[in-house]
Image (tube, rainbow, N blue to C red):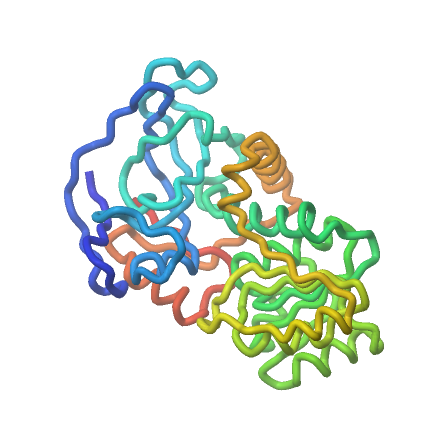
Length: 324
């Protein structure tokens, strides 16, 4: 089978499309014939050796896949060959097939296409965990989403609206903001044209945002924290801007606010039953049209480097998908 391999830490152009042996399902496992694999910003960090998870070489990028069950290992009773499924794999999704534990695989309905299914797990899983489990929102509260047109930001906009929050989309261009407004945002703020702190204060009539969802980091993080409401919750999602900010802790004191880390991957391992329930709920919501799981664009497996460059250039509005 074909696989895109990272054999040493490198950039997207150094990845190699190679032939490797087909996987075999071990006890408790199933082999998925992959129809769509979703990329995330952290895939770039992972192949560069800059991510907290460092898979053994050689590995493939892409941490979430959708496809069809091809074979089953011993002891698997809740899946059958031919089932349409989605799964989180952490890495190794950019290939034709993958063997995964059956307990990590969730069935998808016939009316949910593989591309949209593949993009559900990490972005929406992260956003749902962040908002539901970490932010503990109350209906009517204000949610400011940085990087609102990216995969995780867009998911936060849509889920925030479903939860009854007033969503402020923050992004670097009017086109991205218009897009976010189509996906749940009520208000918008272009932080390339207006100071982020001043803008959030203006849009909240001086009160500040109750919840700040930050997958961007860099200089935007402190500016957003300075515009948080009393007893607000600042959610640390990631650092797409590249720089990990150093936050002045006096702001947490003065605002009476919380800075809460959101590491969905670790939480999912520690809470497998709750995570599976979240994923099943997200699959259902997507199939029902309550959330979009919007696909920005797709690439054949041989063009994985081009797909990663779209993410690196922060050009994507929604998910970037690979087709083995």
